[in-house]
Amino acid sequence: MKIGKDYIGVGGGILIFNEKDEILLLKRGIKSKNEIGFWQKPGGEVDYGEKVSRSMKREVKEETGLTVEIWGYLPHTDHIIEKDQQHWVAFNYLGRVVSGVARIMEPQKCEELNWFSLENLPKGTQQTTRESVENFLKGKYIEI
Image (cartoon, rainbow, N blue to C red; front, side, top):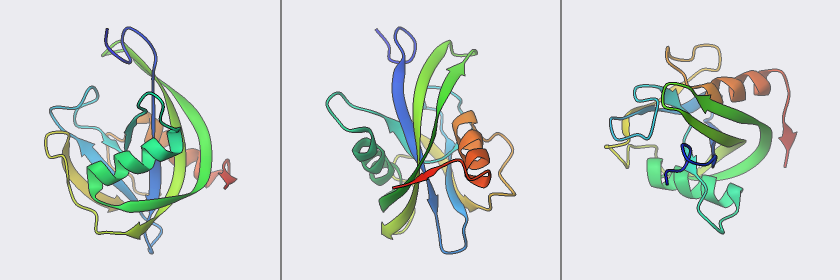
């Protein structure tokens, strides 16, 4: 049985802001589960027994080497990927860097890493990231 395909997967990510109010995005590599070549916020899937916010911080650390704090929560995304016949429910957070320098920690899953302004997202930005940015800009989030 495959997560996201045989049953709905649970995951998410964090829009991480730097001091210039840019967000960190990763370009999905050839070993990604889906949407290869798309840009996304750091994140991943939730492990059994793990709280969602803790799993997002873990995923960010594994992917980028950054330690982050979460300061906000955005609406979730029903991420239905027709091409790959996958369905994920993505929890979306807002965060900032506590320590570290962003770098590619999983080169098989991430081809590139860069900071982008909210008004100038790269072509091929993934649905969960686009929706998170749109909701943030509309003020649709809760500070936590």
